[in-house]
Length: 459
Image (cartoon, rainbow, N blue to C red; front, top):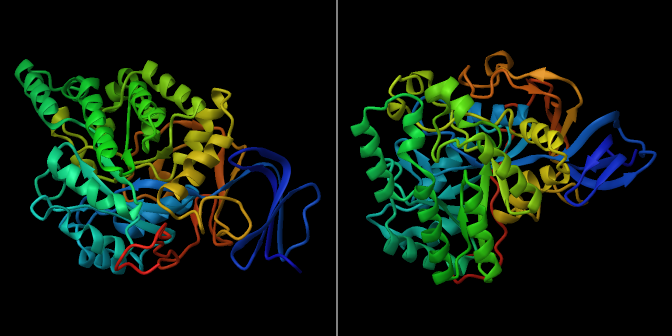
């Protein structure tokens, strides 16, 4: 038979939806996408109304933020179960800031034997070294760089002040890679945090009050203006506010490369209900905002102002998320297993075309990290990374699936009208329902395709 795998169902592409469409796979690559009667294949599944999408690329994952906790063994297991076929891992690992070629290599060697899905890596800088090692990290294969305008920890998650940020952007610009930045103004956040502490407020309200919208928006101007000054593509790695997407659009109108990522928690959770109910388990930087802001962000999706959707996944142990003093909790939540069905649910409920799912969680991330020569689309010649969702109601519970290193999730109890039923990586089924089939080591390190010849870097 001509094809190894044939799937028929509702094929979701970035620009159109093929009802009764099919995807055919040969030798781990997409071979054909079409309409009507599907061709024969060694394995052939007629899936009825099921959605067939490109495997998701999660642009923001923290597999190693807490020592001896999650690691790639678990993050990539959650990913496989959730239809995520590539994770892009952040450089702020506890005990190993990824800020040199040696650190990049260590991380590749560490992750490779564990990974169940493919992975790409961010690099960053040690503020004391500045941009000196940016070129060597490009050679080592990083897909982008990450910085922060706020200092969470001077060693593990340091603030990069304006002049150094400018120097780093200038060093990255010739490589064509993107500089992604955590967008919270350090001086403003610290001032508001002191005000909250002085007020005596320690409950769920404290976090939002300590990081009001202005702290995010000030930082976004700094980031985009630095990109404009250096010619480096500037990317804000998460924005909780509709106004932030307007700022990015104004820079793009002026001809600059300025993009913004929206995390799935900003499209799902709100402050007055979920943060109030969950406390520390919904503490995220920047904070989850009001329900009105959630709906504004969905409008930004529909208007094309969102460039990527990601999770900012991190599986803190419960002990770091249950302090009654809201500000004492670690920031961040797990989301890899549930991002795709949550986005599909939200889009369907609001009448937003599912083409945005293929674009914001696959096509655009592949372009962003320069992986689009092999990833991100159901296009002949690209890797056959596919996720199938069935129209079957389920209620999410992170502890029940067994695919998470922690049993808690801010999404527990949410009813999902579409459930991931199968995930394929390079044409091989790596998950069936909640059962992950991929063994550790199935995933591969993927590196960007150089966009231009850079002296000293092989193309």
